[in-house]
Structures are given as C-alpha cells and as structure tokens.
Amino acid sequence: MTRSPLNVLLEMRPALAGHAGIPQENRLLFRGLALLDGVRVTGLLQNSERVLARGLRSGETLATDEQLNRLARVIITLEQRLWDSRLQAVAHTVMMLARHLCGGAQQLTCFEARHFRDFTWRRLFGRTLRPEDFDVLTRKSFRVARVPWVAMHICGLLTRKVGYSMYPRLNTSEFDVMIAETPYPASVAKKTRLIVRYHDAIPLLMPHTISDKRFHQASHYRALRKNVASGARFVCVSEATRNDLLSIFPQLESRSITIHNMVSHDYFDEPSSVDRVREVIRTRLNFNVQRATDPSARSLWIDAKGRKQVPEYLLMVSTIEPRKNHLALLSAWERLRAEFFPNLKLLVVGALGWEHAHIIGKFRPWIGRDAFMLEDVPSAELRLLYKHARATICPSFAEGFDLSGVEAMASGGAVIASDISTHREIYLDAAQYFNPYSIEDLVRALREVIEPANSARRGELVTTGASVARRYSPEVILPKWRSFLDSEAA
Image (tube, rainbow, N blue to C red; front, side, top):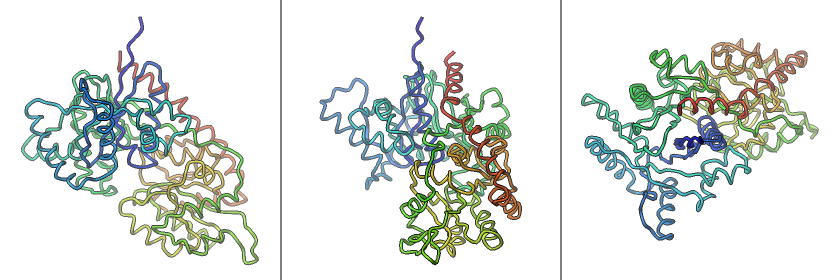
C-alpha cells in the first residue's frame, strides 16, 4: 500500500531577511525537504511587520488576470511598506484577537510561484542555493499568512497583561506538520504537528547580548512557553542548544532531538590563486564604514617598489554585534602586528548588526589601512577568502551552531575557535581553541597556527577540517530529517 505524502508547511520568513545564519539554514532546509521522497513541502510567506495582501482563496473563481493581479500585490506588500501599514497592523491585531475569542482561525491563502519565478528564486533562494535548484524550487507551492509575525507576538504579550497569553490560531488543517524556524507565536490546527527548529536559547540565557532586549526576550520566552505547553516537538541545531533548552524546560527531554545544520554545496576546496583576494576586497568593501578612496583599498599588498606581496590575513565571517567578540580578535591582531607579523591584515565579512557602532569605532583607526570590512560577498568569493586566509577565527561568546567555521573547513581553510560547548561539539578536533575572555590565549592560539614554524599544525587542521565538514553535508543530514519526519508520520 502506497503511503500518502507527508504535507509539510515550512516557515520562510527568515529566508527573506538576510544571507547567512538562520536565513541560509532556512533555504537549505526547504531545498532538502523538497528533495525527499514522500514529502510535499510548502513554504509559508509572512512578513515580520507588514500586513500582506490576500493571496488566492480555495474555491474562489477569478479570471487569470485577476489572479495574477492578486498575487502581484502579495509580492508588493512583501517588498514595500505601504503608507497605512502601521494602521493596518493595529487593525489586524485587534481583528486577530477578536477572531481568537470567537474560536476562529487565521486563514492561509495560496501564492502560486509559477508566474513569479524570478521573485521566488532571487528573494527566497538565490542568495544561498545553486541555479541548478531553480526549476525544482520555483515550482513549489506557498501559503500566505497576512498578519505580521510581530503582531502575533504583541497579541500574546498584551493579553498576558490581563491574565492569559492568547496567541492567534492558524488554519493549517491541510498540513500534517508545520516547521517554524523560531518559537512561533500562534497555535496550529489539531491535526498539524508543530515542530520548532530551535537555533539557540541566547535571548533567555544571554539577554544582555540581543537587540531590542525587552521585546526580544519577552517574545521569545512567551512564544516558546506557548509552544512547549501546546505539545510542540523541538529539533535543535546542536546538542549544546538542546542542553540549554532542557535546562529551561526539562519536560522536553522526550520531545526534542538534535539535527545539525547543513553546509551549502557551494563550500568546497578548489584550486585558486591567492592574487584574486585583492580583487574580492576591492569590490566587496562595506562603504558604510570604508571609504572607496582609501589608499590601502587601491593598492593591497604592494610594497614601496611596486612589487606584489603574498596576501597574509586573518578572516572573520559574522554579523557585527557584541556577542560575536570582534574586539577580542582586533586586540589580538594588533598585538600580533606589533610584535610578530607587521604585514598581517584583518578581513571582517558581515552585515552591521545591533550595537555595532562601538565595534566600528574601535576598528576605525585601522580601516583603510590594514583592516577591511566587507559585505555581500558571494559564496564563490567567500570560498576563496576561507581557503587563503592564514586562519578563519570564530571568537563568539555563544553560538547555536556557527556555520562559518564549517564553511571554512569545507573550503580548505584552518579554523581557530572560542572554547565554548557548541564549537567543541561541531568542530571536534578540527579547530585550535582559545578562551574567548582572554586576549593572551587568543594570541597564543593564533601563533600556534599561523607562524611559519607551525605550518604542520595548520596543515593538520585543514586535513581534519575537511573530514569534519563532511559531517554536515546535505547527504549526511537529510536522512536524519527523513527518519525524524517518518517517526512523526507514524
């Protein structure tokens, strides 16, 4: 007897929000589920702050031109803030609460991607996935949740003030499973199993390191608490994250598992010229912090006689925010330059995150001379930077997974990482570890890897790293999802 496909609804809001981290994992997971036999994956389109136009409703009779106009308006509201969007959001929040009190649910409408394949690919998938995936992914089905994600959180937080957190209901009755990429501020249909892809407990255990601290912490905790109470399953990105979750909610022992993140196929070791590093830096400078006229940006690694020098640099790939510990790396690099490696450069790749101004201020004396901040670096160029860096540094105080180290290993690079439980679990013995609170220990770790006399140690890290990176390939991770989803369907 042939079993019916498992219908999975996957939240796609993070994929619209950025390049790396959770947005990248979101794209890779959608692709992976799309390739699994017996799974029919549908993407859920929702904006954090904007009310979306209505998609197509089941049973609705519209001419083709009217359908396309309706779907085009969904795209416009995903992309453009309308003048009355805040008023709409307030109105929808009130209606959402009223519908909940009357026992109703938020209806999901349909978005047919086949007429809007360029938008679907470039906005949802193209920043991470390969063009070979275009046909498969842009023919998938999508649903539209009109109400803003933040409004759902606000609904729960405000009603709690009167004694009970009331989150809206989503009508997910056509789906067996819904996978949310963070604690989700809504209930699902009785026949739908809610699965929370849990990335980290940082908003709860390190609230001093997050943005919009009061709202971020409260919304994460209250939605998480609601998901726990409603019987949701949790798929954690690392065992370290799962342990943190269990330290808060011990009752989740039997309802939580670990399935590691996947690394993109775009990261692999390939022959390349180190001279191309200059070009990447010139073309990917973050002009919010770096002036195009800086002399170092025009003449990288050129000596006084006009001769090219071999690029020597350290690399960090991460959003610029306090938790990532950029300033420890900056201090260690300054000491290395002053005492051992006068020509060593520092490259930082990443978007400007919360509370970045203080970090940029500390980098400012070096920017345009020997430190370079880059943004929007495509994977093919990032692969090059990983490979030719003396080392990729992952100095965070806390992480849920930390893909940058795995990407560096897959690309043929050496990794130096903070000695935290997540890094030890994910990187195993393929990284040189250091105490993230000690500049001296970071200097030691750097010297043990990048000094010419220690080239054997660097070679050992590269070789071991290649093996460790394969543990997170889609070919290894997807069978774990297959097994988990089969168990949920049983």
